[in-house]
Length: 376
Image (cartoon, rainbow, N blue to C red; front, side, top):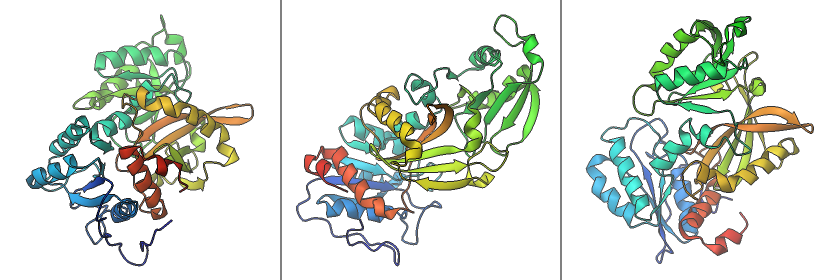
């Protein structure tokens, strides 16, 4: 639904603002970065602004920089909500912590954050998987470690079960610091009092490039200490789901609406579902029978999800969930969450969704009942 905006042949231009706007939403970007078009904006920025304008609201993009702090603050605090389109990274003249503080403070003052830095952090952190372990989409035997002592004690207990585990660091991307861990054949005999002694040998595979190596538990825990150091350091320890080799399913969400499912199938013999590692992507409608159990269970979890993640009631504007297939149940696949992301998820390749994004943004900011009932 393109609503009169030309998306493909030329770069879209911002529509005139309504003379009597029903409300105001500010869209925030930073200058520079690899995600910008020739006009300096992300590819989905102007289409999203135009969709909001066409629904009778004021919306214009504004570039944050430290020198323009006051200008941006004034715009944001005079809005019902803001849409943050700043990809985590380094931008000239931008102190990320200053921008984060401004946006988090605006939320405290009643401005709707889509999404606030606080929500992005909580949702994107690997320990989100611990917070949801009692929901249908979570794995109950999921643990988080924040110190080396916690890690040494907890990991030696979880490996003593003899089952394969997956260890995920909080930072990094593309599968870096995600390790599949199993006891080397015969090492289960070393287990005493429900713990693996330090000399127990592990077979390890890192998802970043699928390489394999062996280390003792003692060597591996010392090696992993780098994942615990510094700001945001943590490790999450989960049961390994062997069907990860069949790929992950990513759900693209706009508000509480599933828009599409993408099956990301790893290259043969691999466990990583990134394009870089050779994975292939196939798209499905959320109504596809193949994923009916996944959608049924996830829709049951949705009302409880944000509370479990300690984000409050607010569902993000554009976000994704990666699901890993579990054991089959009644002939249908079960699925468990591997990761959430609400940090600047783009729709640049699906600009026909801009109208829905605009509509949901207004609903988040105003509880507009007329819009809620309208068809997309």
